Image 1: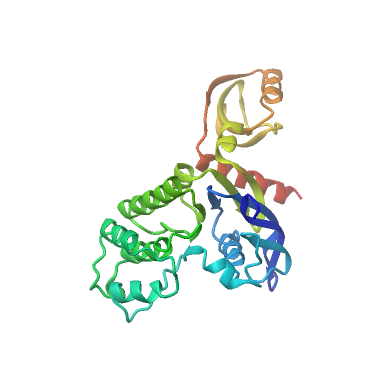
Image 2: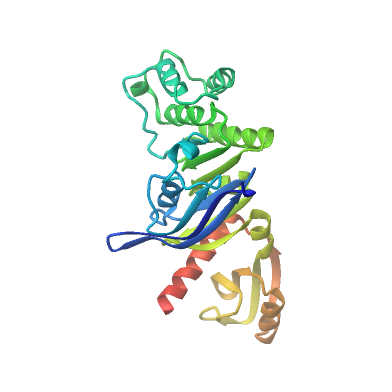
Amino acid sequence: MSEHVIEISDLSRRFGKKQALDNVSLSVPEGAVFGLVGENGAGKTTLLKHVLGFLKPQQGTVRVFGLDPVADPPGVLGRIGHLSETRDLPTWMTIRELFEFTRAFYPKWDPVYAEELRMMFELSLNQKVPTLSRGQLARAGLLLALAHRPPLLVLDEPSSGLDPVVRKDILDAIIRTVVDEGRTVLFSSHLLDEVQRVSDRVAILDQGKILLTSPLDEVLVSHYQLTVSFQEPQPFFPELEGALTWSGSGREWKIICNGQKQELEVALQELKAEILEQAAPTLEEIFVARMKSAARSSFEE
């Protein structure tokens, strides 16, 4: 098997007139936590459905553990723990019945680990699924995804709409399972601070296209935020190579930049602008800058 648990090459998918995925290629290495970020409708869930074999590629290929998830569902799905954003669980069951029902599908179900997670997530065995809060549903779904100790976790917005305590539980479970056992996680999220906290690698999706895919450390190091001051007030910020986005007015402006730092500094000197401060932007700030830059480029085209 390749060192990459997931390999996606030139994947495209259209629903009617909407291009949901457009020539997407990315690889998820074994033992990594891979964060997939993008706005609603960017194609994150569609991409995850292809990984799970729920959708057949119209163009390109998807391989999970070296296998085609559409052609070989037993060989792929039995090794994946999946948590969907909808948290769909059988409504006629108690937590105990839900565990026993799910356990029957997974020979490697670990009852000791399942009980450990149940206690950590504070779930009662006698509680019925319809009475669970949204947070409890997320905890129960994550428990089912983890308890058979799959080598790959695929999580779609695992902490969406949840309170901070529940989100921390979920993130802690992800971190522990990867650190302790070297498993692989692919998850989508719009909560960029959490993606930054747990991810080794990230990919930014925009309107079905990959804007960026790289190790998180490289993304953070290659972007920077500058506060600059011009001698004279500026009615608008000048177009500069490497400047993704900018905000401010008059003399003082803040810009988010990507690479080409020396060229940008020379251009600012030629404009008689002084760099007052340099800071490291967060992943969320980088994401917003990338999205604005992509929207501007699309508009200009």
